Picture 1 (cartoon, rainbow, N blue to C red):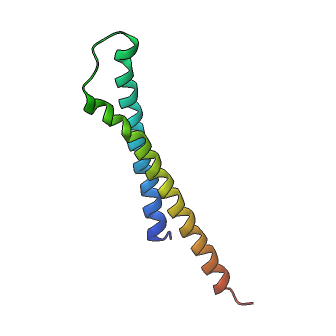
Picture 2 (picture 1 turned 90 degrees about the horizontal axis):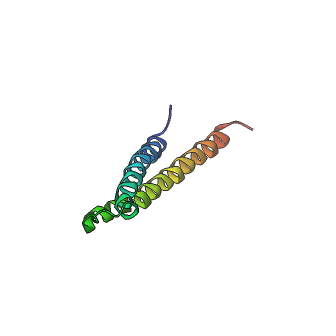
Picture 3 (picture 1 turned 180 degrees about the horizontal axis):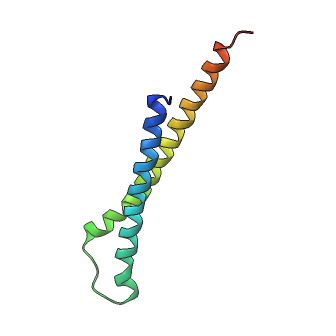
Length: 83
């Protein structure tokens, strides 16, 4: 069985990937008017591009949580074995 902190880390990685994807789509959509000489989007549309680094941060945090939980399980397994 996996521990709750590992599950939380996996969930953060998945959520970060979704948020990063939404930010990537927002970035592509906001740059299209610049290339085709269309009217610019309002400023809040550009703030949606900030979802990309937020998603990256969530994913990295989840990665560290998962690695930390895995390390704890490995250390607990080593100390539980009789010598």
